[in-house]
Length: 165
Image (tube, rainbow, N blue to C red):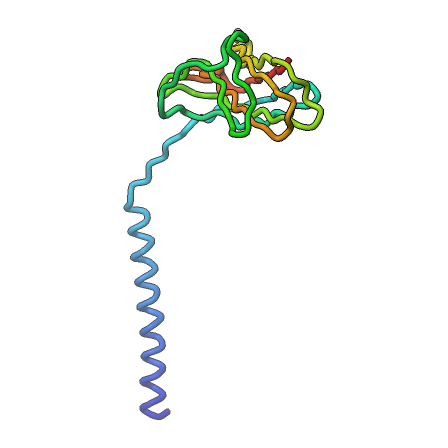
């Protein structure tokens, strides 16, 4: 066997030894590292119901945390939030850091010119709202109805119901 072949055989076996040492070193580092596990409990909704009259469409925009506070708008039918060319917002009094439920109400063809009350029932709690919105009979207009539901959701699983009447 030539000297060149013996050297290549030695260098190949040397690379395998190096790879094995590297792999064992990585395994040792992984086992030496501390691993911490943090569990987070997420509430789940078991079901939702939306009831709305002909001419309106409601879109569930879900729950979020409010970054800012805001005064109420449209909580009385003596001063409803009126659909218009630009999107509007009707809401209960919003407290910064509270959970907010948002439902978007859109007008469609055939919407009557009338006032509607939007309410939210979350779990078995008392209803939130009503928020009063008023249509002018024009399709394609939007009002976001936002309800401050406090700092915590009901125990999981829970249900909620949005009614527009």
